[in-house]
Every structure is written in C-alpha cells, then in structure tokens.
Amino acid sequence: MKHFLYTATLITVFGQIFGANPQADQQLIKAIRAIDVEAARKALDSGADINTTYQLFSHSDNRLPLISVVNFRKPEKRADAAALVQLLIERGANLEDTDLSDKRTALHDAATDDNMTLAQLLVNKGAGLNPQDRNGYTPLMLAAQTGSQEVFNFLLSKGANVAKKNKMGQTVSGVLKQQIGVRPPEYTTTHQQMLQDLEAYIQGQHLGMSALTGRTASSIPELPRDIVKAIAGYADFTLNQDNK
Image (cartoon, rainbow, N blue to C red; front, side, top):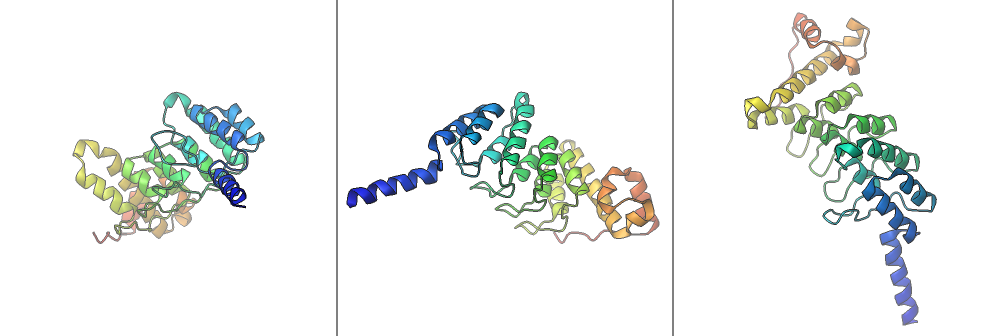
C-alpha cells in the first residue's frame, strides 16, 4: 500500500511539472528555446501543455511558453518569434496568464520592449489592454516608463485606460513625469513627446473630438499635435494635474 501511494505521488508531481505528456513537453521546451516554429507545432500536435510553466532557461524562473517567446529579444529571431507567438495563440495560449514573479502578461512584456508586431498581434487576438502587474503597472505605463513610443501610441489608439493608478498612486502621466524628472534632459526627448501625445489624447477625449473632427477619441494620437493643441486652446481647456 505504501509503495502504491509513493508511486502515485511521484506520478502526480511529475504530471504537475511536465503535464500529461512529458515527452511532448520536453520537445516544446526545446522548440521554445530555439524559437523553432515547426518543432513547436509538432510538440503541440503530440500533446504538449501550452499553458504550463516550464524552466525554459537556466537563469530564469518557470515561465509560460507564450511569455518566454515574447521576452526573446534577439533581433535576428524576431520574425520567427512573431510566428511562434501566432502559433501559440492559435493553439490556445491564455493571453491573460502572467509570469510568476512580476505578474506581467505577454502584452506587458511586448510594451516594455516596444515590440509593435507582437503588441498588435496580442491586442488583435483579444489580449486585455489594462491588466496590472505586481506593482500596479499596466502595459501603457510600462511603455511610458521604458520610452516605448510606438507601442505607447498604439495602446492609446486602442483605448487603454489612462486613469488607472499603480501602487505608487501614479497614473501613466505621473509615470512619464517621473522619468522626465530623474533622467538627464538629453535622454528625455522621447518621454517628453509621449507626455505631449498623452495630453493631446486626454484633451481630445474631454473636448469630444469625434464631433469636431469626425474621428473617435481613440484616434487622436494619429492627428497632428499642433491641430489638437489649437482646438484645445480655442476651447480654453486645461488638464487636471496629478496630485504628486
């Protein structure tokens, strides 16, 4: 009886670590490490668990396959990484799952890296725009913090929430202002431009820009900044300042 219980326990633990098909899971691990789309496809066809965390790299915590691929930063593999993300999503990867340490989704990581290809893919496939990580940061806030301007404006155009606050009580505006305040002026040009884009976007929302321009508020970042400011100035509108 004891031998049976010991064996059953080992099987249970082994299954929790590697899933229902350990061999296929190991194949998926190798495919993710190599960013090999076809090898990943074969592993998934063989029953690999797409939503189980694995220690994919010796220096990292256990991570989901999707988040690991989004975090793969080698430029020469970006196209393959995008194709692999597409495959993982098609096979049922959960877009809202987070990593174990920072509680960040795949979209958080795409925003941090200013990876427009993956950000568009994730959002178009239904990824939530406003999840908050362990510190309360949304993907928009991380794009602001890291100067990821292209993804920042993309998330604005999709209607990302600009009023959410992180655990420090900052909105995305506060995050940008903090970066401008702590960095040397020569390194804040991008953040200053992003803050201007954000202010123009918020002004457009409050002014009902859809009625004035025939566009929705979420498309304001696409308008020339001087036009938005001219309309905002004509209406004598001022933004509420952060209580920082």
